[in-house]
Figure 1: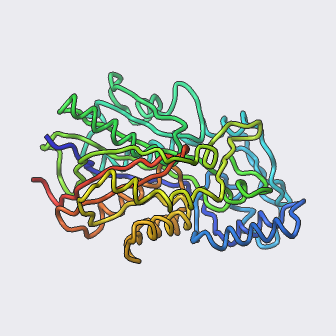
Figure 2: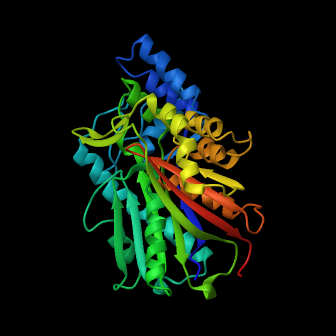
Figure 3: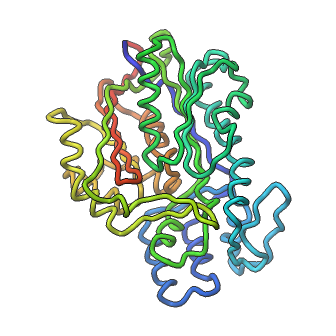
Length: 377
């Protein structure tokens, strides 16, 4: 019995941020001294990101306005984040979470519908739902809303992985793999959705500046099943999974809840820790087995650089990861599915072995070994 990713669907909000414009918006905030402005410029310019997406339309409008004219007033269905002069506001955590409750479910549903359509799977065939998010909380949550919004059977078994950060898509796929091992006829819908921009704040210190320069909004879904009759096109076989905790990093990457939104702790040590430990972590996972293709979560450009150098990879090994970072930024848990989706739609050869790596709070490495199949066996 072989469990496979049958399809992947992705979705992003319509509002797009150009990296140079949002850089200038943040650098121009009241109270930003010359040092802060230099740090903002350096972080944004070195990010290797060109565009990102956000649910905050007023933020996108302010960033796009060269002279920061008055921004259209937000209506009752939106969380105002920018004044009419382009100054960032500081909504409460409750206001940010209320916006998540309104704005996240439609994005989850859009990605899920695309994945189901690509796999030629009817909503009525879904037996399990696994949702992932770390940028908002409510109950009944995204898993419940998917049942209602997609018209899934009310008997669908639901699980939600919350607050696991950027690496959480891999444990979600592992959960789907385990479900299929226990229920060979299962059809599992995995959906990751993150609205990172809801927690934007005026960048003042290193962590806030780095967060402001890389994080974005997006959702991605995968249909997973061990039912061979459901394979209709290219797929990924799920071979095995691994989790590795690094020897250090617990205080260097963390995600906590503050009074004015969720707060990211992301020290400059994170890329260095990854660079020091990636070889041992990957060797313990893969052993002597070769890898043809790499799918690495782009926590940032420096993370990809450290993985590339730490594993002695060729210069083009992380091209897809760098492309997703360039066009979408870091969408936390959804990002690795964007990368796998691009690979699934690409020109991989049948039988190529794909190593999937994602990094989360802890510092934690979540890994998966996949095999690409061009068509049904």
